[in-house]
Image 1 (cartoon, one colour):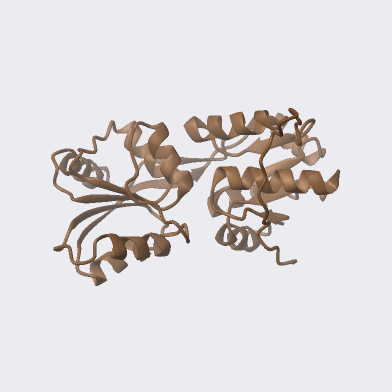
Image 2: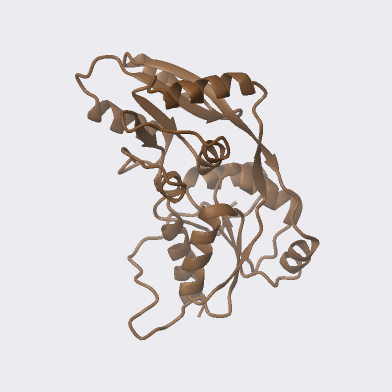
Length: 271
């Protein structure tokens, strides 16, 4: 399989002349909610017709009592920090009506997660400026909390996530309570979406995580060669490859806007 490199170069679109570089393009957005709505709006601004088809959702954790206890402790100010590693974790916080007091700082693993937090009415106090991953967040954390006494940290994660962040925080001396917030499950898409993708009527598919890649391949694959498959980062591309999903382009940065820009670059190149 070809190794694709992140696309570079600033894109400021639509242009001052009102050009729409994605005019006529149908783009599959694999996530709903505030994030999906925001991405769909950005796609429309560039002339595309977004097809919102959520392909993953969260299922309750197997230990809901532990999660509920952790969220109650969070609301009462029992943690100095809470780490949020995915937009799905934000969905869980919203579904539980979780309260994050002003005294508790919020660490988000990347721009997508930070945007989801803001859209849901929360905030993000730290977002990695370089590598948008648990490892990148850990590096930012060490710099931001250097010399601070051990902190009480609530680390919310999915059932399948590696505990890179929790182990790293404990290594540098903080007290971490790692709690599984959800399990990821696939969501069947409408048959029309399946038929349109297989018939080549969808021009691009956004792939925002390994879980999404798995569902795209399982439900929609094999993807037609003419359909552009865009991944939000190198790790997502690697995960997609493991599931047998071809990736044509990788966003230069791990953000929704960069992902859309990568699709725009490809559209301009094809034109």
